[in-house]
Length: 393
Image (tube, rainbow, N blue to C red; front, top):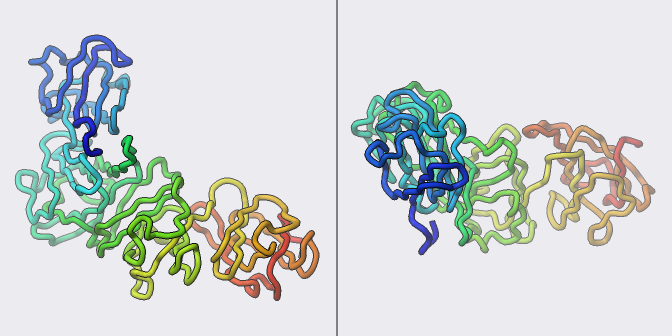
């Protein structure tokens, strides 16, 4: 939350749309009977992350649950919980994105007893041998171990890319794992936790499975400092503006992102291999990046054209024929093909001069991608000055 913003709280309403009798809470309530609100609530207006349960004591017996999160959120309950809420609690760690927390629950779907910590725990106290669901908040991942003192089988869990923007622009990242099957461990297997990622097995869920994003980690083992970039911040010409210049050591990404040694998309370029999402950068690339950009791959077949070799300099993305390349000096020296369609590139304007066909050959997530870092790799001896969809060479 932002400094000076409203506290984590929830206001319960008898009727939908935030209407009728209302009562506000800033604390957990294991039983609504004493407040004469049991099985009577239909909507809420809240700030924070709150979980609502069908039964008292946070569903120690099996029942429906639902959660809402965000600043000043007004929501009606789904039918499964209208006039059926009997208890609720907040994930109190959701105060700011600089505070990494993990909350462990004895029951599936965040029910039953809980244990939360901002630091490494070699033993998880009363929840040892009982953990059945997990929530992580903040920027960094956590490692779950099946033995005490960080021993046994291990797996990393990350925040999701779901985020809420406060009025001051602050971002908060969350990760929900309602069943241990999603983590690849049995119920009750977790016995210790450590901040950071120290396992080869890594789990993260992208909101809706569709938004491109990248997490940049300045610390080893995917630790702070961290910057999360989404589609609305997909070209950063100087990472110094985010205080991430020349300190990036690890990356987690969805989509195709290019990272550069120099500002303004120049210098040596790096992109994550198609079959990888989590990358602990090799020594030659650690602490070197100064700019980055996302290559838009979703939607129609297209080509990204670059002013200079190795995908550096200015970029122009085209979806249809271009008889004249709208880049400085009207030429491109490298390109990336996106989608199933081949394209024909020409060394002259207006589809004139030498020509060659380029196409996508590598599956990169859901799209076929073709990388052509130089004019020579396209089968040409001069830069591209026009392009047409289809192969005519």
